[in-house]
Amino acid sequence: MKVTVVGTGYVGLVTGACLSEMGNHVVCLDLDADKIRTLRAGGLPIYEPGLQEIVQRNVAAGRLEFTTDVEHAVAHGTIQFIAVGTPPDEDGSADLQYVLAAARNIGKTMTDFKVVVDKSTVPVGTADKVKAAVQEELDRRGVKLDFAVVSNPEFLKEGAAVADFMRPDRVVVGAEDERAILLMRALYAPFIRNHDRMMVMDIRSAEFTKYAANAMLATRISFMNELALVAEKLGADIELVRQGIGSDPRIGYHFLYAGCGYGGSCFPKDVKALIRTAEEVGQPLRLLEAVEAVNDRQKQVLVGKIVDCYGENLSGKTFAVWGLAFKPNTDDMREAPSRVVIAELARRGAKIQAYDPVAVDAAKRVLGHVQGLSFAESGRAALEGADALVIVTEWKEFRTPDFEAMRDSLRDKRIFDGRNLYEPKLMKTLGFDYRGIGRG
Ligand code: UDX
View 1 (cartoon, rainbow, N blue to C red):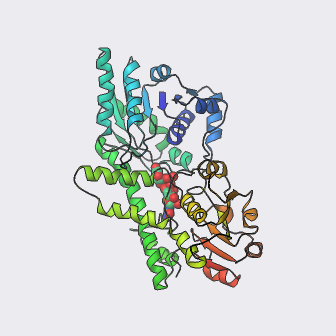
View 2: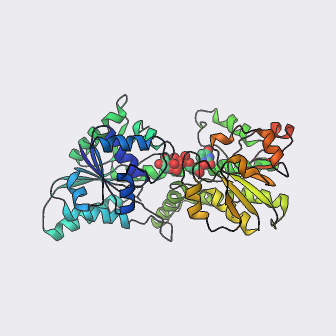
View 3: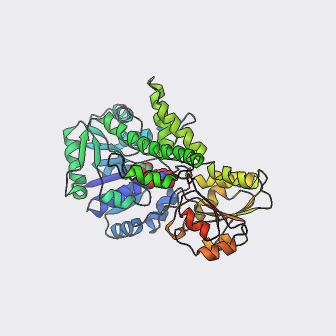
């Protein structure tokens, strides 16, 4: 099939690459000429396991093309995915200008039937706006052409996006047009061969499903983070409580890890946007407002522990920071808790020696200006001359370090662990002053 994907960000690139892997001829459009140049040269603007191979293979096979040429891109695909950014507005609602501009471009130049698919996470009701935008451009040209608008939200986890796309739990399709439904079924059939995991529903329910999923997951995390703070006061261990409740199949083990707050490009933005949408329709989401407030506070918890220990003035102190990306297996620094931790330590005069297996370049772009911050080549190097270690992201390589060397490097033999990587009793035996989250 002929597919166009507008936007070569995280979602667009994974979608385009994975669809080409199944034999579709995919054209990916982006207005950012630098990005397109990088992609054509075989490079990737993001780090995502498995993606580079797929991109290179399909570019070589002629099934995957990158372009900045809008007319060519619109002419190519019967199915046009819109996968551009929806950054939060000042008031937290999703900014739709890029989505609607993409829709207008389709309306401006299309000459045959198109299925316009909203892949970006967009507020309920956006499909109607997309439809209106395309129609307006057609009217302006004075042409009568058929098109359908479909909502097809993504549920890709960064770091596992290729696997999630190739073997989805579900494919949600919000559509009314029968032709569009048939085309979407054909497009996704190779990915859901063993079970029919495609759920076709009305467009508004599909749009809402995406927000509801992320809001539920964010709620679980904030709930556990809040319980963790209580556990500390009560002398209980949140890790044992997690296992105790996760064994109930109604609760399940996933997304129950207390930590230093959720980040990334989705949860913070989507929670905010859903709060705004609910307000707009006069049905405020009190629970979700609390989820957001708890998360903002949670990003400060590590710094609070450090201040409890060393006082407000941290000048003369050096902290090693392990992990910068908002989670492992990505170089994404968007809304990463490390940004808050590092800014707060620096503000109090501390020196910071930070290390991340892949996110150092991305971190330099957003934290490069921070006074007292330097980047180390390895986890071990970050510890050299540090008073204490702060763990912010749970990369695998941090899980079983050389504890003895670590202890000998750290002046105060102290660890502030925002991801509960180690067993408190073991750390005590090894001679560390170890402080996790909720491990009372
Ligand atoms: C998320 C959704 O999982 C995905 O379905 C959606 O399409 C986009 O948003 P992603 O942003 O890649 O994906 O990250 P995810 O793995 O869900 O983690 C989000 C944040 O929650 C991370 O900061 C992570 O550290 C934190 N988290 C996750 C916890 O603090 N505790 C947990 O138990 C799980």
